[in-house]
Amino acid sequence: MERPSMRKAFIAMLFAAMLVLPATAKSNDRTDDFVTANTLAILYHELGHALIDILDLPVFGQEEDAADVLSVLLIHQLYDDGDASDIIYDAAFGFLREAEEYEPALWGVHGPDLQRYYTMICLFYGADPDGRHDLAEELDLPEERRDTCSDEFELAEASWGPVLDEIAEEAPGKSLVFKGDVTGLLGGVLAEEVAALNADFALPDSVYLSVQDCDEANGFYDPESREIILCSELDGYLRDLSNF
Image (tube, rainbow, N blue to C red; front, side, top):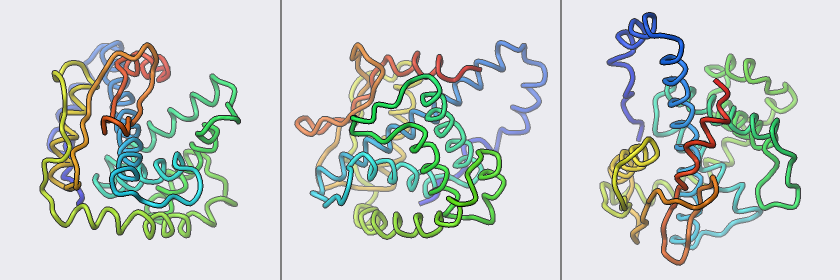
């Protein structure tokens, strides 16, 4: 299910162009990458909630943790290693920045941001410890945690793998439906992902995806309407969080 890299054909050209871009343009491009990576990670997380709902999957533990695990697995499976690593870097950095900016809500349904940071890195590293050693070093994954990461990834793959295999059997499909106009970065990412994910998977029921004003920076799955909603406020929030 690995997707061909969208960047490889243009990487040399883009690098050359970046050398002559003003600093503000470079910063804007880097921020767009950060927003895109975090949007993808959030989308795949919410897709996890949708799959748990539609397929009536059992969850042993926190559903939010299970959705986090699926997000990492999809990034690992759907992208070549270079693009997947870029996404993980930025998505993990998003958790780290939130941990720096906000006190952990230990009463909440999500795990603390710093724990989510390390778990994301661990799972991704555990899929290929030799090839991703440098990533673990750069992101300061402790040696004590690295020792368990391969086992953690194998458990995650054993849990979600059969589910992904099942919905891949009937692919391509049309079960993911984008609602609204393709405007702004969030809308563009959603529309592109709907097409790409429909090529990989087919669900037994439709799931709708949209960008909406929510009066908060958030993303969520609504089981009543079977809709994944990314709040338009996420764009500005992630740009502020990027700190580039």
